[in-house]
Amino acid sequence: MTSPSPDESGREPSRPQEPQIRDRGGQQPDDGSWHPLEPLPAQDFWQVLYSRRSIRRFTDQAVPRDLIDQVMHAGIWAPSSCNYQMWDLVAVDDPERNARLAQLSAQMGNAPVNIIVAYGRDFSEENYANIQSASALIQNMSLAAEALGLGTFWITQMGDAQAVRDLVGLPLDRRVVAVLALGYAKIRPKRGPKRRPLAQVTHYNHYAGRPIPSSVDPEAWEPDLLAIYQRARVLNGLRHNKPRPWERRALETALQTMIPEIPRDLEEGATPRWLDVLPCTGILTEALSQKRRAYHFDVVERSQEVARWCADRVYPKGRALAWPTAGPDFPEPPAESFDLVSCLFRLEGLRADDRRNLWRAMAEWVRPGGLLWVGFVNQRSFHGWTESMRARRGGPQGVEYVLSPDPNVGPFQALASETIETEAAQAGWQLRDRLGFQAAPEPDELAFRTRNFSPTKGKLVRGGARFAGGLLRPLQASRGRFQFRLFEKER
Image (cartoon, rainbow, N blue to C red):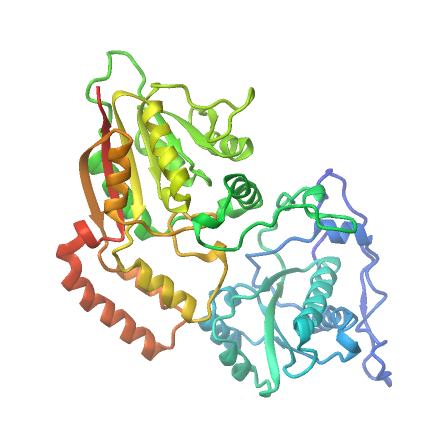
């Protein structure tokens, strides 16, 4: 067993008593009261609850089966609908079988043990009580693993659940609900992600809040609700997600082609100023600042915390500015203060009225003769096809899984080039340059999108996409998924 980690206050938690494996030779009661370890480790409940982390990287160290048994035993003491307890657990610790599971989903290739959690398909289906019962079991196992010095990762993206069931021999009436990866942590986060404030999520006697939309349609989102949602997602850890390589290639090529190292009419000795609009995670802001070090970068965002997070990612640290609502401690960008403004893959997440307001605001922030660089996903590209394919395949659903670059956080709908250019012209912008990239998926994107396909289906899809790519390549300017426009403000 690993030694316990210090808690967030820096105190060393009390060390659990080393458990001993119980003698399996005697008669075991069949009422579930027998447990594999004696004595059980002494751990403070609150310490276990608040120190548990989701572990994404595990060591190769094998987990003794007695510890696995103890984790599963804690699971079966969870409540279940009507006390049916119609769960089944298959602990996979065979490396070869785990390798086959990893072919279905990469998340099942990280830990030495994968516990497949199944529940009776025809039991307690009303209000998903069967899923609730299995979830309570998984939570129990996660906390028990923490008390035993182990780590877990709750896996819902299993790929083909039917294939998972077949691989471990579960009968047809068992529904695979999730997989719990189990092992010794290789990397353990010292702090958990920030939590939404208790006052935001709790109510007495009657709901008193405003619902956060689950729609991918930007028109369904009020600006302040989008700000609340994005603040929670960014500060709670989504910042660790990274743009895909094919997205970075398009961005870097457009940057190199369209944006000069230094503005052409910059006064001698002056520092050019760049404002990045709604960077959200700040990943692209940081990348741009590293490629264009002559500029000083500031950011404008919906909430002060997200703006500050993004502004701190550049060097030297930039200013955190506000749109659309400013305050004494969170000012709006000063008028005509920036040589260049960028808005990359953010217009797709705005309502039409808000988008038009942003075009006008960006025109106010740029000095006469300054530039506006816009990146967007083309409505007339293969993007719609890949998004519909993702939805039809039964993969991850919800607004947080929409296919979009950076990654986007919130609603997202691709835009037509004429919409972008018309709205820009209405706000007084003059078009200077156009670029389009990737009229068909790149080879590495194809490999990623089809990674959970069967070998035959994956080969067919990749071959068809390559053939289509050859035909569409001459149409990149109009049909490329990633589109970039460079506008200039009148002098």
